[in-house]
Length: 139
Figure 1 (tube, rainbow, N blue to C red):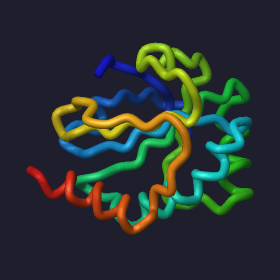
Figure 2: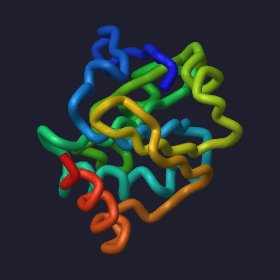
Figure 3: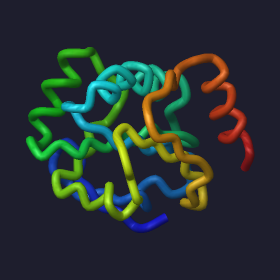
Figure 4: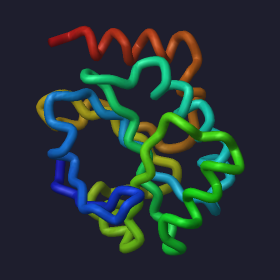
């Protein structure tokens, strides 16, 4: 994985290395992307169900409008379990070779990409949760 940098909701710098040792579902999205908006509640529910010391959903907004825009959107749709992460430069998109939004990467504990999905998904569907739970269980 290329090293990408972004900021949290408080403007503090973050990188994927901050999640070392965890499985990460990295979702690249934007508030202006209709499919992204539709899947965000499912990502929030997935984080509520599986999030913890072994797994994290990292929803990375590429909105140029900044964190206030994302905070407003999260409040409107009731997102309460996802941390706000933002890359207004969109450099992460280019570094990761993102060709469309949303794009989601599954990253293992060693920081290696083990899966990629371009387009929306029902992240909290039972078969998806079971699949991710199975990956997390592999130490």
